[in-house]
Image (tube, rainbow, N blue to C red; front, top):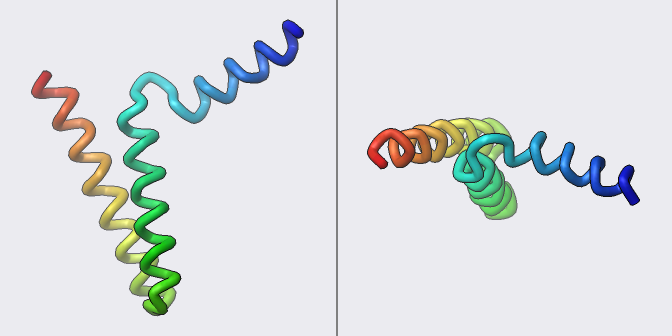
Amino acid sequence: MRFIKGFGQFWYDFIIGDDWKIAVAVVAALAVTLVVVLAGVSATGAAIAGGVLLLLFFVASVVIDVRS
């Protein structure tokens, strides 16, 4: 049981880390990118959109942390 608890704690720290808002931003950017891909946008357009969204969501989460 200790192994399972340690395994879960490792993955929580690895994925969530210090700030859960950044993890949510990454998941949201990936979800929006998936919608863009399913809408039939070219691979290059989807990659650019995903990168821009990831950057914007990351900056927004850092700004929220700095302001509070």
